[in-house]
Length: 113
Image (cartoon, rainbow, N blue to C red; front, side):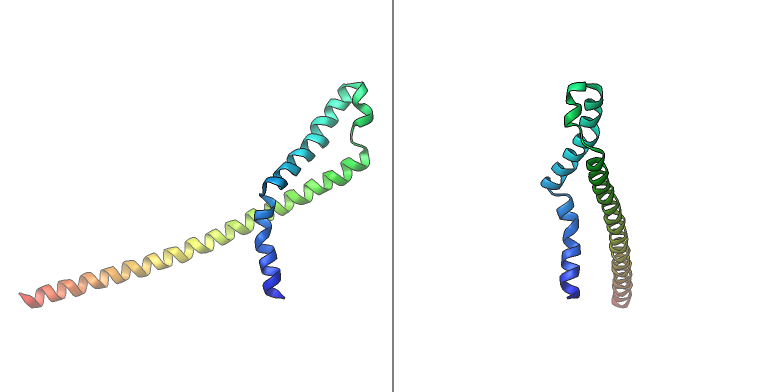
């Protein structure tokens, strides 16, 4: 069960960044903000303007998606930080092993002479 949840959660960023999701976000912005402002300025569009209920529900939808996107970005930042930290540790170990190799080569060169 834990594996299913982890797999599902790991797919959320790709779902939110998909073309259809971006289209939905742009559509909601256009409908809730741009079209609503135009409908206020152009009287004959007023009947087609989003209702208060639609603005409330769809506005909350976009707020929830924004919060979800922010949490995903924060989680991605933490994951990247952990990977960079692990990479630095591997680099340090590699550097230490190269230094040890140089010491061995120097020792062997000194013994040869």
